[in-house]
Length: 151
Image 1 (cartoon, rainbow, N blue to C red):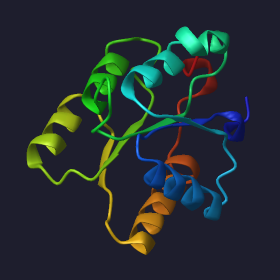
Image 2: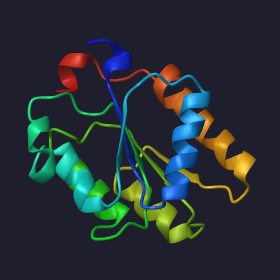
Image 3: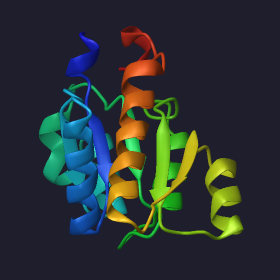
Image 4: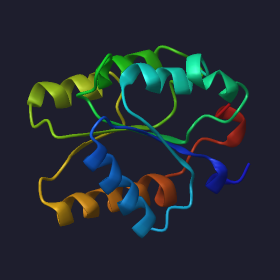
């Protein structure tokens, strides 16, 4: 499997933040497919190929999950804990990208298995730059799991 074929799962309930993140990835020439889901339950359905995403059964898992903390139905920490508790998803890199500046959220994210914690800048240009750098690092510089482990 070509690394560019492996996708990114963006879990973001804010349409504006999702649009900015997608634009930043595009400006960074990220060619990987990007799936966008709007809440924590939908994220787990996507990852575990259930519900509306049952047709994903047998398809590759994303190579990166970009996860907001403040989500409807199931928050980002709930998603992260469920991912780390399942052998299929426990090794997928997860970047928490959130507006929270609370130390307890940073600690809880890392304690739950986050690989990185990024605060969303308020400024538009800074937000786009942060998302671009995130994409460049995790998709171009970081060494992903070998394909036979990423199933």
